[in-house]
Image 1 (tube, rainbow, N blue to C red):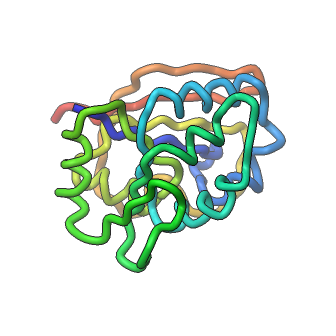
Image 2: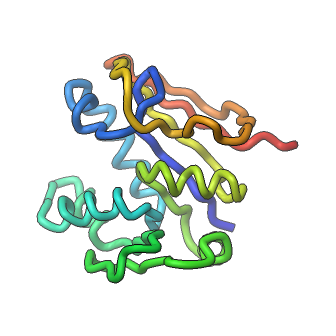
Length: 182
């Protein structure tokens, strides 16, 4: 069975909104290598509408020597949205209803794992449904004070177990968490 992995850029105070405004000064070769390995270890993306629209506007025109752009542009992408009528980025499919069933079907298909970038509302929905297998939080050593958080205020309790942690050269940490067995 494939795993659903939610990977997030977050600040020390838990904000994940608009990472382009606070993460770029920390960018390093080891972050690039980590994100490259992460993308090449999966064969599909699962995205919320807002993240999908941002990625679809940016990625189709990009190229790079390492093949990241080619990989992200060519792989299957599933966008969960009740408002999006079509998904024009290559290999994109809209999931507009019965999210639990559709995501469970994706998990049961053969292939590599499925990655969620950003997509706070989708992550929250899938967390409530017990469909996320791993939360990968890349924490940047910055506090921004306000913004959308990975786990919204007022959500039900979610107990996680720490898997692996890595500290990168610039003080960014990557922590992998798995839902704890009840």
